Image 1 (cartoon, rainbow, N blue to C red):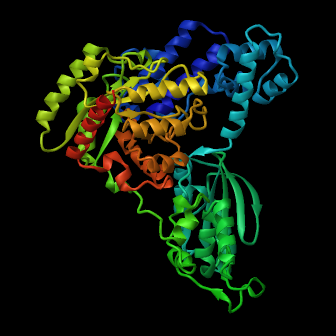
Image 2 (image 1 turned 90 degrees about the vertical axis):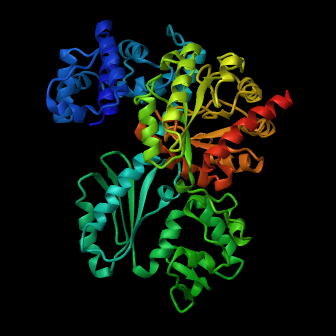
Image 3 (image 1 turned 90 degrees about the horizontal axis):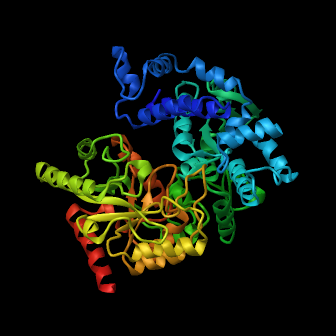
Length: 587
C-alpha cells in the first residue's frame, strides 16, 4: 500500500463525513492527515514495521487506522462509512462544480444519488429553481457529466500498461504456447489514455483449447464477455476491457501490425497498397483478394519486412495514427525520433522547499543515479499558497543553497536555479525583475482562473511569453487527463509567439498531464519551437516520468534535436542565456 493510496482513503473518509454533515473538526483532521501522508518521503509500509512511530500532526486514533490499512490492505471504518451512503454519491462528488455539501443537498432534498440521477434531473429542469444552482452552475455540471461519461471508459497509459504487462507475463508463464505474444492496440501506439488492452498470441491449433483455458483462469478477470475460436473478450476487475486475438505463427506479424494501427492508419494503408495491386488484412499480404490464402500470399517475418514490401520505411507503432505517416514512409521522411537514452538532464522539479516530498539534495542524488548531468530545480512561486510557494526572500535562500551544492557536486552534476512562476490573470509573473534575474530559468504556468475566455487566456499566456525572464511555458493547456479538459486557448497563435520569442514549450511528462498534446508537437517543431521533456516531479522517484514524455514526443514526430534536454549542460546553459538575451533585444 503506497502513501498516496493511504492518503486517498483518508480523503475519501473526509468526503463521506462531509456528505453526512459530520463534525467539521473531524473532517479537517482526516484532510490534514491525508495531506501529511501524501507529503511524506518515507513509505509508511516500510517504516511501520518497527512498531509505533511519531508522525507530527497525526494522533493515536488516526495512526491506528494507518497501521490497520498497512497491515490488512483496507480499513473497516472506511468500509462501514462507504456502505452507509449510496455508492453513486461518491461519483457525484468527483464532478467539477459539485463538492460534498452540494452532493449531500441534492441527495437529501431531491433524492439524487448517482450521476445518472443528476443528468436526468438536469434534463427535466428540476434544478433551475433550486437555491445554489444557477444557470451557469447547471451548464457546468452538464459539461462535467459529459466529460465523466467519456473519462470513466478510459485509463491513463501507465495504469493500462501495468495491467497489460502483468497479463502478458501470465500468458507467457506456461509451456502451452511456443509462439509469440505481444501487446497491440493503443497501448503499443503509446496513446495518453487507453480504452482497452489488445493482445495478439500465436498458438498452434492443437494448443488453442488449453491456452484459452489458461487465459480464462487469470485471477484478475471480473467477467467474460465472449469466447470464440480465434478470440476472447473479457473485463478485468479494474474495469478495463481485454481482447485476445489467437492467430497462427504465419499470421502473427500481419495480425500484430493490423491490431496495432489506428482505424485511420489501417484504412489509409489499405487504400494505398491497393493502388499497387495488393490487399492486406490481419492474415497477410495478398496480390489478389480473390485468391487470398493461396500462392499469391506474400510472407514476411517482421513488420520492417511488411512495410518494405511496399517500398516504405518502417513506421514505428507510435506514429500509426493516420496523420501523414504513410506518405512520409513512401518518401523516406520518417524521422529518427528521440529516445529516452538521449536525455542528458531534467527540468521542472519540486522539493521540500514547497510541495515536494524529497529534499533538494536527495533530488540531486537521484538525478545523478539516473546518469543525468544536470537538473533544473523549479519550486512553486509566491502566488502558489496552496503549494507553500516561496516568497522572494525564501527563493533567494534556495538560490544560495543551490550555489553551495553546485560547488559540492562540481564536475558531477550541474544544478540550474529556477522557479515555476504563476502566470497571473493579467499575464504578469509573480516576482519582480530583480528576483527573476537571479535565476537560470523560469517556467511560467497557469494555475488559476481557468474559466477565462479563449481570447483572454491566449493573451494571458502570450504576455508571459513576451516577458524577458520566461524561459518555458509549463503544461500549456492545464489539462488533467480523465479529470478535466484544458482551458480554451489558441495553441497555434501561442506557438507563433513562442517561435518569435524563442520560448521553450514544456512537454509535461506527468501521466495526468502529457501537455503539450502530441497532436500539436509537429506544428511546434515546424515553427522552430524547442521542447523540453519535464517530469514535473514532486519526489525523487517521479524523475523517471520522463519516459511517458518520451512516448508523447515520439508520437509528435520529435527528434533528438527538437528537445532541449538532450543537449549537454554547457549547451543548455547557453540556450537559456540566449533566450533571455533575444527577448531583451525584442523589447
